Picture (tube, helix red, strand yellow):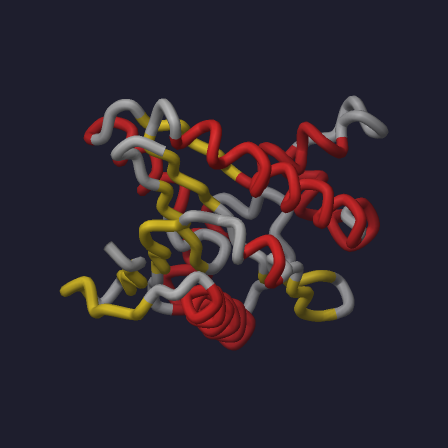
Length: 187
């Protein structure tokens, strides 16, 4: 796999994952960006060609099923080693969403995580008030509207990332910022 590394970037919706990944693209070369939401949207457009990101967020409970998630997860585990032969990879994703019925978690299966050669897991965090402000500024189909919901989504996503770190044999480190938790891999 050369000297290239894969970094998993996660956090609650509106935590700043896409912003951080775009900043990384300016600093790290070569870098392949794999936004899970984009890949999911492309996958679902096979059956729903006019589907938008906002509509996917608003209707995810209806549109996204376990089979779709499993197929995408397996494809990522299959593709990542080939990508790492030629480039660094930043994977942006969050498995915790707020649906019309409550919280939904579509986590990676252990068998998939064990196949992902991750150098680090980065968890972005913001205050629940800041998350709520960001969603208010750009709802983009997001359903949650209270500080309590924002806090719950963030706590669950952070807890899930820590579980990923255990399976991937990574360990948590304070990255020196109250807004960032770095979970580093062996090496």
